Amino acid sequence: VFVVVGREIVVNSKNGLTSQLIHNGGGTVTLNLTVESVPGAVNAKTFFKDLQGNDAGMPPVGTLGIANPRATPEFGLSVQRVFTDPGIFVAESHALDSASNSLAYVRKTIVIGSADLGASPMARSDGTEAATPRDVPPAVITLNSMHGKFQFTSSKLDKVNFSGTITLPAGFEPKNPAGNDIAVSMGNVIDTIHLDSHRRLVLPTATSRVTRFKIVPPHLPTGVATGMETARVNIDLNVADLDVLGFDSEGITVSVRSDEQGQSPVDRFIQVDMLIQGQSFSAVVPVDYTVSSSGFGSITGR
Image (cartoon, rainbow, N blue to C red):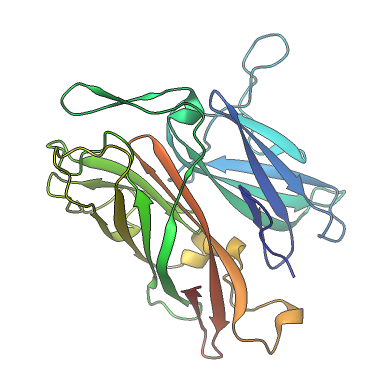
């Protein structure tokens, strides 16, 4: 049985391919891959992608002090990437045999926040700054509920709903006159949304994957969060082929492993990430996964 065993580690529950992310600071991340569970695997290649599926980040500076040329994919069981701007990205890694054939793959969501880039202040709309510590790990998203339905043999849209609780970042202004931009990812499916000054979602979103987003903060006497307040967040993804877009490497597929045959439900783990005003939020949500004989799958948070 393949399970998540630590922070910033994901395991493809169908094949055991493991990806571990390490934040090195200065926008640099290291991705370590474990391929021993994949028969015949001796190496790996990794694609780093942005929300549009385009190549993201750059390889680190070489020994001569010159930036290495962009290489897509990057080969090796330990690879690095440098990001210069906050955002949510995905590393898609493939286990390779001796002839460089792909045997299995896993995806790791990468959230780059202000702390990862060495920045500490957050600007408020009034021009003042709210100090936040450097090198702060991603804040936790506490699960309230999560459920979804995936249509493997139908043209109907897939849908996933997540409800959770976060601690608002210091300086966040829910009713900012300019609105707020928030990056969101569930199951490696990324989108960027804009909320207007009344906290209403502006459609369409960057990738038209998030169809509902609601943040419910407590009463803020000054209108600005101090970094101690909690807020409820609700997110809906409603788009075709969510499994192909990212959930399949979380084990959300039309079939389960051979050793899981006859079991219902089976354990799965879904990555959920957000980036709000430079603060990253992450969770790996355990869910019960059930596959129907009629061609759809469903998840329920636990």
